[in-house]
Length: 231
Image 1 (spheres, rainbow, N blue to C red):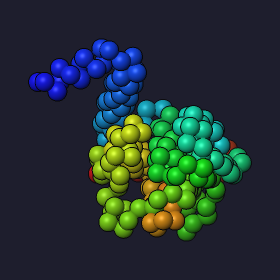
Image 2 (cartoon, helix red, strand yellow):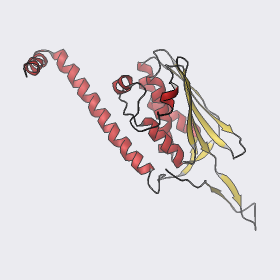
Image 3 (cartoon, rainbow, N blue to C red):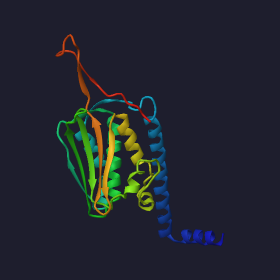
Image 4 (spheres, rainbow, N blue to C red):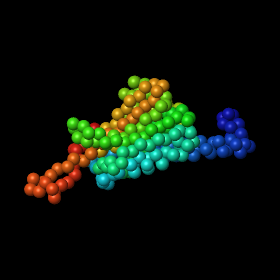
C-alpha cells in the first residue's frame, strides 16, 4: 500500500510520469482491442463460410496495401522494406483477409529484426504438378527461429520472444490467423528459418482451375476453387 501511495504521489507530481503511464495505458488498450478483433476474425475463419467476399484479387495490390500498413513501424525501426511483385498475378479470394495475412507476416519480420535490417516482400507464379499457385514470401535477416519454436509458432498465443512481441503490440495470434486464412483459400503457409540468419515465411495460394463445358469448351468456362476442409 505504501509503495502504491508513493507511486501515485510521484505520478501526480511528475508530468513526465503521467505521460509515461498514459502511453503505457494507450499501448495496452490498443493491444487488447487488436486481440479481440483477431479472435473474432479467427472465429469467422473457422465458420462454414470463412471467405465473406471471394473475388479476383490482384496480388500486387495486396502486397502494396500490406506494406503501406507497416510503413510507419518500419520507419521507426529504420527497417528497409523491399518489394518485388510479379505483375498480373491474380488469385481468387478475400482481399481483406489476404492483406491481413501478408501484413501480419511483414509486422513480425520487422519486430523480430534489428534496426536498419532489410525485409523483402515478394510474389511469384509457381507451376506445380498439383496446379499453378501464387507464392507470397516475406523474408528477413533478423534473429531467426529455433527448430523447437518453428513447430509451435502457428499455435494460438504462442510467441517466440514474449517481451519483444508484447512491447510491439503483439497478441500471439498473428501467425495463427495467417494459417487459417491460407487454409480458407485452399493454401498453406510454411517457414524456413535459421538462428542468427533470419526467416522466410511463404504463403502459398492455389490459382483457380479452368473447367470447360463439354458442349462448348470456348464459350462456357468458369472458375472453381478446391474443396476446403478446415480443421
